Length: 282
Ligand code: ATR
Image (cartoon, rainbow, N blue to C red):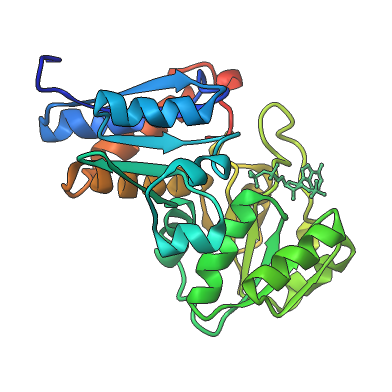
């Protein structure tokens, strides 16, 4: 029950209406029976919103598009990992001191590490946006040999330089996948409603490969279906969403996240409890 002692956490972004974050976090609070609640705020002025966190004593916030980078300058401290990525997706309020974190990369790495070891492996990372960067920073920290490929080659080159990746190129170099151990797809290709699309020709998928598609709507993308058919190990995109939220949960509450309850709320929603056309990416 919400009462005078309820601790408030929230999502700050624009748009926010289709986000699954409230569902995942609230399922966790309910499972532990703790007096927290999680709401969404559609925000255009991030400076005012962060002043609001302080002014209202909001315990924690998830930060999403378009504020992940611009929020940084209004915070008191930035965790070194978030600093390296240059973006925050999480703000924790400790008695008025606001610290920014980035749990996106950690979430992705945890999802991958459930299926494959990382050190010394060769990974091909497709994409050059914010998600690709957060994951690339984590992969390099884990000792992965990284090749970044992107439609716009220049962005791949910049990202590769920023994280000290081994190599980069355009999508004309997809044949790199033949000699890779891990393939990570971070673009929006294959996302609902264009679920028949994929960037990767299936003949490049081989049975020594682990394939991780961060697209989670649909739950199993064409890329993952083809990867499974070709004998690859696969990692579903919803796992990244789940684990980045679980890490936020732990930062907000100091409690271990009840993963089964959070996962079941998320997968039920993805499997048609709600209208699949209405999900965006986060
Ligand atoms: P995010 O923060 O989720 O990473 P983003 O920053 O908008 O999102 O990045 C989107 C990525 O998807 C980019 O790498 C983009 O390629 P470009 O840099 O060439 O724009 C990639 N992308 C989007 N649509 C694509 C398509 N149809 N084919 C190939 N790549 C695509």
